[in-house]
Image 1 (cartoon, helix red, strand yellow):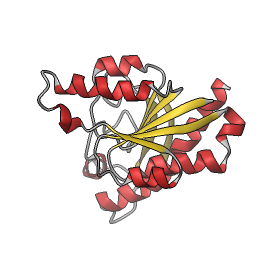
Image 2 (cartoon, helix red, strand yellow):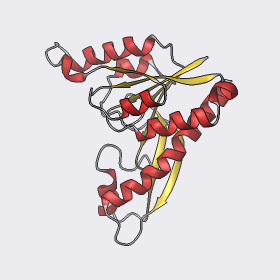
Image 3 (cartoon, helix red, strand yellow):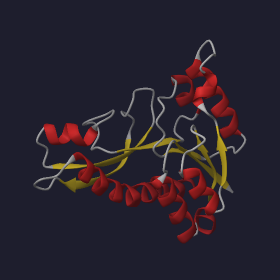
Image 4 (spheres, rainbow, N blue to C red):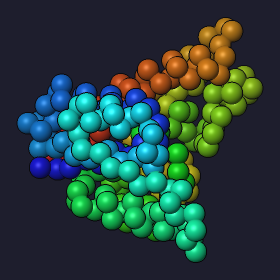
Length: 198
């Protein structure tokens, strides 16, 4: 059975969409794959309860616990990798995981580390994507699933979805419309990756 590990920081709505798709579409039967673990870097992340309610094991690796380390980011990433590696995952999915990972961590999972970003990359990498798109006068925005590389939000694109900007759109309203499309895009791309591995 191929294990999938999902990393979250908050509500985990994309994680929930992937878990639901995996169960609804019987990824275990189709691809020999399952979501085996959800990890959060915040103990109070609401997505942990969502995962547990779906029968998925959870873990917490709190980044703040490594603040006193000589290199806090590297120490956190090392502990995170140790927890992930217990699952020997075929894929590690970032789903609203709000940490910039070290190059060593990214290289450890090269080809298996996947992220979703709320813009049509390469446009608007980083944060405040929706407001930046509105400020630039964009007529379309969207979301991108991509492989993670050491350069933030610049890995090879695996899939995208386009969302039109409507008159009077706010960053918050646009974010919600894009998010609803992310919930369709991310599971579809992951299923495609699993099909290639089968």
